[in-house]
Image 1 (tube, helix red, strand yellow):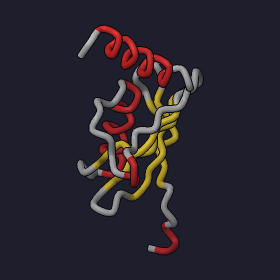
Image 2 (image 1 turned 120 degrees about the vertical axis):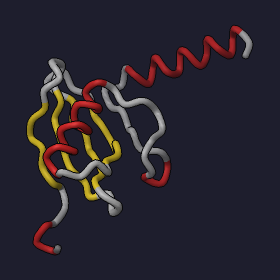
Image 3 (image 1 turned 90 degrees about the horizontal axis):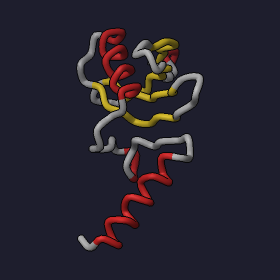
Length: 103
């Protein structure tokens, strides 16, 4: 990779981080293969504990100074769960986003 191509790639990554929104899903809703942030990892950990299901994937996240909203897919059907992660590594508001009345 040339220096100018590397500079463009770095600038693109830096500008993507400034939007305040991070989409962790690849095209088609498939989970991303990038390394989750600390906030995302905290939610993955705590959703795993809450659901007692180790089959979790990061679907989406949205950064905010108040806390990062993380959407986690659980199980083979990727049931959506919401979690808020804070800078200190704690989480809150873990809840299922599925229509449990339809189950």
